[in-house]
Length: 236
Image (cartoon, rainbow, N blue to C red):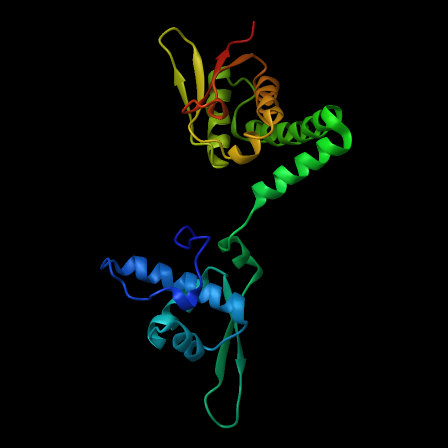
């Protein structure tokens, strides 16, 4: 649900008016506002949500249906006397991904704690174990996606796809001289890697292990460059 931003100010202070004239933006805001209101206040009916958000009941119902089809909200039916049953909506566990998170803060704190407890030696052991786990996963994906006789170029290209799936904005360039370069235009773990150089060293070691060739880092986002570039040479 890329249309659902992961952070927002208090619902009470956010105007529903669509000042930019874009209906899509208004609908996206309303979906987010509904999720926040349900998270803060608990289950609510469409009428209650419409009143709280200053929106139309029709608009709220439309967005609730969208959210329910995405498994972000669910409803239960309540009966009161002889009238029509009333639906009350609430967020599902899957909705957690739409709310703000601080995984980088947790990771940084854990790395600091690990170093505080065991110093560089324990830090290296933890990162080495993590690298082995990632290596096993990536090798498994390469085995699924590539034939057994895949070339180093094929492996680098597929590795770029795997990294791109993790948010690294990766691409491969094959120079006229046959030199292979893997570019990562974004560091998906920048806030962690920026404070723990060992994380970047672990990535370099990972690429060398997976590709089995000579891999050299030529540029480095954490060092101020625009991208991380790895030059890959064909193994002898």
